[in-house]
Amino acid sequence: MGQLRASRLTADAVVFRPVPGGGTAVGSVTGVSTDESPFLRACRREPGERVPVWFMRQAGRSLPEYRALRGHGSILEAIRTPDLATEISLQPVRRYGVDAAILYSDIVTPVAAIGFGVDVEPGVGPVIDQPFSSAADLARLRPLEPEADTPYVLETVKNLVSELVDVPLIGFAGAPFTVASYLVEGGPSRTYARTKALMYGDDDLWFALLDRLADLALASLRSQVEAGASAVQLFDSWAGALSPSDYQRYVLPASTKVFAGLAELGVPRIHFGVNTGELLGLMRSAGADVVGVDWRVDLDDARRRLGDDVALQGNLDPAACLCPWPVVADRVRDVLRRAGSHPGHVFNLGHGVLPETDPGILGQVVELVHAEGRADRLTG
Ligand code: CP3
Image (tube, rainbow, N blue to C red; front, side, top):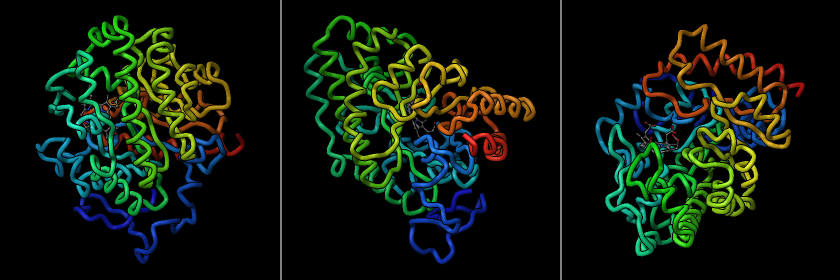
């Protein structure tokens, strides 16, 4: 398990080892620096001591210690409270021994911070007071000034980096298309009909909207990296609603702008979407170092589609984690087998942890990936 410092909020539920002497935050008792951690090595396609694993939506959801800490308060309020957001981000690292932490925040944090009028309704997701519908709404999307608008995010990142000794922190943002879908639809959608109507019907307004959202994502990600995040993930969760040609024309330029703006920072850039089997090559071409693959494409097939000069992240079906352990174990082994000996594999789920998942199973997944993923990759 990664090394953590003593936490500022309650840590009674799970035992962890504080850093001896409580000394500096860099390096660790194992002598492995964050930069040489299994996660960052795999992102760079370098053979490492083990196959790294973390889980999308690992912070929250299925963890009882999360529910105990959060109570019924608003998510956006928790995100604005750095001590709380720090503790929630650390909980899965402690419990599961995952190889990366992800910041506890949300893809709507930047738009909420500039006053677009977003709330997150329990059991629903982001809900918008006045959805985006016309050119006049562009004025409601001013540039993000991270120090002034999201100081709590930067404080959480700094707290985390000082508490996590040899475990890298992943910063994240919503990709322009996925954030646009919430702003235009007014909330979660199954069809993205309004979003597509705007996209197909009004080029000028669509590209202006996506450009604003690219700038917001970029400003947020840059600030997270400058505060200490070691990698970033751009979540284009709902891009799979588009055909390759529409993705290429209407979405790729804005996402490419985000990745290009991060290049000089030198941190691995992960690009993830759901149902994006047909888009994997385009998502890679946006400038990603690591491409997230959901469970609909086998990893050996994803590797064939993308070639060797990119890392892959994925792709256990989250629903498999609801099965008895022997079934889960077989499926974990299948993912490892399909990833083969290529060193550029970060084990993850194909999408987020389902709320009903038994945390014990996720702990066993981590152990199994660490135990059995290693041999192949060392020779890779
Ligand atoms: O799931 C994804 O595709 C990841 C991208 C994404 C996030 N938020 C990142 C996130 C998306 C699409 C959202 C929007 C959102 N926000 C939804 C989905 C609604 C829909 O359209 O289906 C929901 C339910 C929220 C609200 C929210 N955000 C909750 C309830 C939580 C707490 C933990 C949880 O997952 O239940 C979050 C935190 C959050 N959103 C994190 C991330 C990366 C940080 C926690 C983590 O990843 O472990």
